[in-house]
Length: 278
Image (cartoon, rainbow, N blue to C red; front, side, top):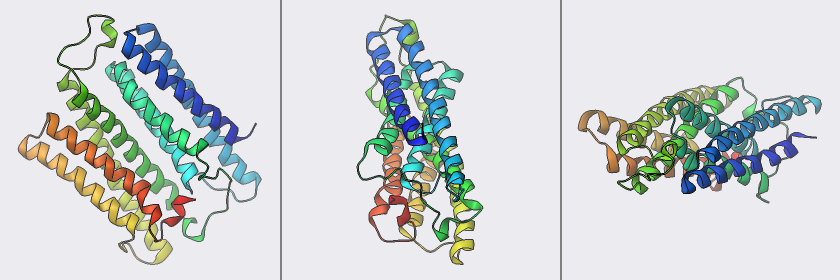
């Protein structure tokens, strides 16, 4: 069994977890929620196993490197980061309904990686620009940041969709209050902002070692900076002007739109980061 097969199976495990979370929310069944959590944990274990095996496979092919160098591999890590971050949030705060909006995001990332005909899962040698000790630090920090923004996006959608009353059935499956959703969104945005900042800094150091300059206004660099400014504006407005609730949720959703364009959209543009579309 190779890594691609394990990761393909993991895609369906994440899909099952997402379905169970949604079903538990709709039907107010705590038992389904507990099964959903365990299924999510199984998905994470499969994701880690597939990621680790792929890393070992690169060494077996004589081109050993961290599996973080192309679109397929980044999506695999993105899904893992989303799932791990969400499960930590659920374990810490005890709001399993959030899984109905968070776990589908992990599933969609894995499904795109595993099922899209436009993405190859073939292990490839590193391009010259990727042969740097900064690769792992840069990609990991960026994608933990992206994952936090993804969870914040799901929380923002839930905030906007939330009705003013909770169902009387299944007390464990009441939606979090608007205050809790707003606070969790803020915490995820802060976490994502810190990791995105670290990702931009490590990327600048990497760029200097690879191309002899820290910043070159490449499309990926430009949109990373735009995304950074969007979330910096949100955090500043919350701190200085007290932005909360609907306004903050809308800004969080817009910020995640910028994240998606930074991740996928710039691959359609010429630039030094165009390898990300491979």
